Amino acid sequence: MKENRAKQLLEEAIEELKKGSIIASQKILEDLYENFDRYINQKPINYNITLDNLILLTLGIYYYYDEEMTPKQKFYVTSFILYDVLSSKNLKVQNPYFSYRKTKMYFIFSERLENRITTLAYNGFLMVRERYIVLLEKGRTEGLNIIRSLDQNTVGELAKIVKEINSLKSRKALENYVRQYLANLINV
Image 1 (cartoon, rainbow, N blue to C red):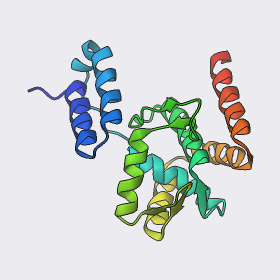
Image 2 (cartoon, rainbow, N blue to C red):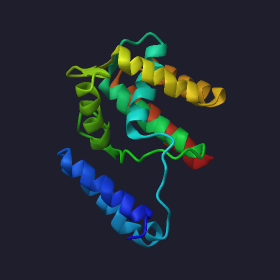
Image 3 (cartoon, rainbow, N blue to C red):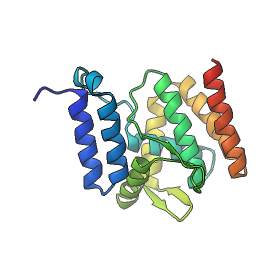
Protein backbone atom coordinates (compact mmCIF):
# COMPACT_ATOMS: atom_id res chain seq x y z
CA MET A 1 0.00 0.00 0.00
CA LYS A 2 1.29 3.43 -0.98
CA GLU A 3 2.32 5.57 2.00
CA ASN A 4 -0.10 8.43 2.60
CA ARG A 5 -1.58 10.54 5.37
CA ALA A 6 -4.64 8.28 5.64
CA LYS A 7 -2.47 5.26 6.43
CA GLN A 8 -0.44 7.31 8.90
CA LEU A 9 -3.61 8.31 10.77
CA LEU A 10 -4.85 4.70 10.77
CA GLU A 11 -1.55 3.68 12.37
CA GLU A 12 -1.95 6.45 14.98
CA ALA A 13 -5.51 5.28 15.72
CA ILE A 14 -4.29 1.68 16.17
CA GLU A 15 -1.50 2.92 18.46
CA GLU A 16 -4.06 4.76 20.59
CA LEU A 17 -6.21 1.61 20.82
CA LYS A 18 -3.19 -0.42 21.93
CA LYS A 19 -2.65 2.13 24.70
CA GLY A 20 -6.27 1.71 25.77
CA SER A 21 -7.51 5.04 24.49
CA ILE A 22 -10.73 4.34 22.66
CA ILE A 23 -11.79 8.00 22.70
CA ALA A 24 -8.52 9.24 21.17
CA SER A 25 -8.70 6.53 18.53
CA GLN A 26 -12.30 7.48 17.78
CA LYS A 27 -11.35 11.15 17.28
CA ILE A 28 -8.58 10.20 14.84
CA LEU A 29 -10.90 7.87 12.92
CA GLU A 30 -13.64 10.54 12.75
CA ASP A 31 -11.10 13.02 11.39
CA LEU A 32 -9.91 10.42 8.88
CA TYR A 33 -13.48 9.66 7.79
CA GLU A 34 -14.41 13.33 7.35
CA ASN A 35 -11.23 14.15 5.39
CA PHE A 36 -10.50 10.83 3.71
CA ASP A 37 -10.38 12.15 0.12
CA ARG A 38 -7.81 14.76 1.11
CA TYR A 39 -5.73 12.44 3.31
CA ILE A 40 -5.57 9.61 0.76
CA ASN A 41 -3.73 11.94 -1.66
CA GLN A 42 -1.53 13.56 0.98
CA LYS A 43 1.95 12.37 1.93
CA PRO A 44 2.57 11.29 5.54
CA ILE A 45 3.58 14.12 7.85
CA ASN A 46 6.97 14.13 9.49
CA TYR A 47 6.10 15.98 12.70
CA ASN A 48 8.30 18.82 13.96
CA ILE A 49 6.49 18.62 17.31
CA THR A 50 5.10 15.28 18.49
CA LEU A 51 2.61 14.92 21.33
CA ASP A 52 5.46 14.08 23.71
CA ASN A 53 7.33 17.18 22.52
CA LEU A 54 4.25 19.36 23.08
CA ILE A 55 3.89 18.06 26.64
CA LEU A 56 7.57 18.48 27.49
CA LEU A 57 7.71 21.89 25.81
CA THR A 58 4.69 23.14 27.76
CA LEU A 59 6.02 21.83 31.07
CA GLY A 60 9.54 22.99 30.20
CA ILE A 61 8.39 26.59 29.81
CA TYR A 62 6.53 26.38 33.12
CA TYR A 63 9.71 24.99 34.70
CA TYR A 64 11.69 27.87 33.18
CA TYR A 65 9.44 30.18 35.22
CA ASP A 66 10.25 28.22 38.39
CA GLU A 67 6.97 26.33 38.41
CA GLU A 68 7.93 22.93 39.79
CA MET A 69 4.34 21.69 39.81
CA THR A 70 2.06 22.59 36.90
CA PRO A 71 -1.68 22.41 37.62
CA LYS A 72 -3.29 20.03 35.11
CA GLN A 73 -6.06 22.51 34.33
CA LYS A 74 -3.50 25.16 33.33
CA PHE A 75 -1.45 22.55 31.48
CA TYR A 76 -4.36 21.63 29.19
CA VAL A 77 -5.27 25.26 28.50
CA THR A 78 -1.64 26.12 27.82
CA SER A 79 -0.97 23.13 25.58
CA PHE A 80 -4.18 23.92 23.63
CA ILE A 81 -3.00 27.45 22.90
CA LEU A 82 0.63 26.45 22.29
CA TYR A 83 -0.59 23.82 19.82
CA ASP A 84 -2.49 26.51 17.93
CA VAL A 85 0.42 28.98 17.95
CA LEU A 86 2.97 26.37 16.84
CA SER A 87 0.65 25.12 14.08
CA SER A 88 0.18 28.67 12.81
CA LYS A 89 3.96 28.98 12.42
CA ASN A 90 4.00 26.29 9.73
CA LEU A 91 5.39 23.72 12.13
CA LYS A 92 3.97 20.24 11.72
CA VAL A 93 2.48 19.52 15.13
CA GLN A 94 0.87 16.18 15.91
CA ASN A 95 -2.83 16.77 16.59
CA PRO A 96 -3.86 16.19 20.23
CA TYR A 97 -7.57 16.39 19.27
CA PHE A 98 -8.59 18.72 22.08
CA SER A 99 -12.17 18.79 23.26
CA TYR A 100 -14.22 21.28 25.25
CA ARG A 101 -16.04 19.78 28.22
CA LYS A 102 -18.09 22.50 29.87
CA THR A 103 -19.04 20.66 33.05
CA LYS A 104 -15.73 18.89 33.71
CA MET A 105 -12.81 20.01 35.86
CA TYR A 106 -10.55 20.10 32.79
CA PHE A 107 -12.76 22.06 30.40
CA ILE A 108 -10.07 21.83 27.71
CA PHE A 109 -8.88 18.23 27.50
CA SER A 110 -7.04 15.82 25.24
CA GLU A 111 -7.33 12.09 25.75
CA ARG A 112 -4.21 11.67 23.61
CA LEU A 113 -2.15 13.98 25.81
CA GLU A 114 -3.48 12.31 28.96
CA ASN A 115 -2.29 8.93 27.65
CA ARG A 116 1.11 10.34 26.68
CA ILE A 117 1.47 11.91 30.13
CA THR A 118 0.96 8.46 31.65
CA THR A 119 3.60 6.99 29.33
CA LEU A 120 6.06 9.82 30.02
CA ALA A 121 5.54 9.31 33.76
CA TYR A 122 6.18 5.57 33.38
CA ASN A 123 9.40 6.35 31.48
CA GLY A 124 10.68 8.76 34.16
CA PHE A 125 10.17 12.11 32.40
CA LEU A 126 7.54 13.40 34.80
CA MET A 127 5.46 12.56 37.81
CA VAL A 128 1.70 12.89 37.95
CA ARG A 129 -0.25 13.89 41.02
CA GLU A 130 -4.03 14.10 41.18
CA ARG A 131 -4.18 17.69 39.91
CA TYR A 132 -0.54 18.46 39.11
CA ILE A 133 2.23 17.38 36.76
CA VAL A 134 5.84 17.56 37.94
CA LEU A 135 8.66 17.60 35.40
CA LEU A 136 11.52 15.33 36.52
CA GLU A 137 15.21 15.79 35.63
CA LYS A 138 14.99 13.66 32.48
CA GLY A 139 11.91 15.63 31.37
CA ARG A 140 13.53 18.98 32.19
CA THR A 141 16.52 18.16 30.01
CA GLU A 142 14.33 17.08 27.12
CA GLY A 143 11.95 20.04 27.55
CA LEU A 144 14.81 22.54 27.50
CA ASN A 145 16.27 20.85 24.39
CA ILE A 146 12.91 21.25 22.63
CA ILE A 147 12.78 24.92 23.67
CA ARG A 148 16.31 25.45 22.30
CA SER A 149 15.31 23.88 18.97
CA LEU A 150 12.75 26.64 18.33
CA ASP A 151 13.58 30.13 17.11
CA GLN A 152 13.81 32.76 19.82
CA ASN A 153 10.80 34.79 18.61
CA THR A 154 8.60 31.71 18.89
CA VAL A 155 10.00 30.88 22.33
CA GLY A 156 9.32 34.45 23.47
CA GLU A 157 5.73 34.25 22.23
CA LEU A 158 5.16 30.89 23.94
CA ALA A 159 6.75 32.11 27.18
CA LYS A 160 4.45 35.16 27.18
CA ILE A 161 1.41 32.88 26.86
CA VAL A 162 2.61 30.63 29.69
CA LYS A 163 3.25 33.65 31.90
CA GLU A 164 -0.25 35.04 31.22
CA ILE A 165 -1.97 31.71 31.88
CA ASN A 166 0.12 31.04 34.96
CA SER A 167 -1.02 34.36 36.47
CA LEU A 168 -4.69 33.34 36.25
CA LYS A 169 -6.09 32.09 39.54
CA SER A 170 -9.50 30.60 38.77
CA ARG A 171 -11.24 28.34 36.30
CA LYS A 172 -13.45 31.24 35.26
CA ALA A 173 -10.36 33.36 34.50
CA LEU A 174 -8.92 30.49 32.42
CA GLU A 175 -12.20 30.12 30.52
CA ASN A 176 -12.30 33.86 29.85
CA TYR A 177 -8.69 33.75 28.63
CA VAL A 178 -9.52 30.94 26.17
CA ARG A 179 -12.66 32.78 24.98
CA GLN A 180 -10.66 35.96 24.43
CA TYR A 181 -7.91 34.05 22.62
CA LEU A 182 -10.43 32.41 20.28
CA ALA A 183 -12.27 35.71 19.72
CA ASN A 184 -8.97 37.33 18.72
CA LEU A 185 -8.41 34.57 16.16
CA ILE A 186 -11.79 35.27 14.59
CA ASN A 187 -11.13 39.01 14.43
CA VAL A 188 -7.72 38.69 12.76
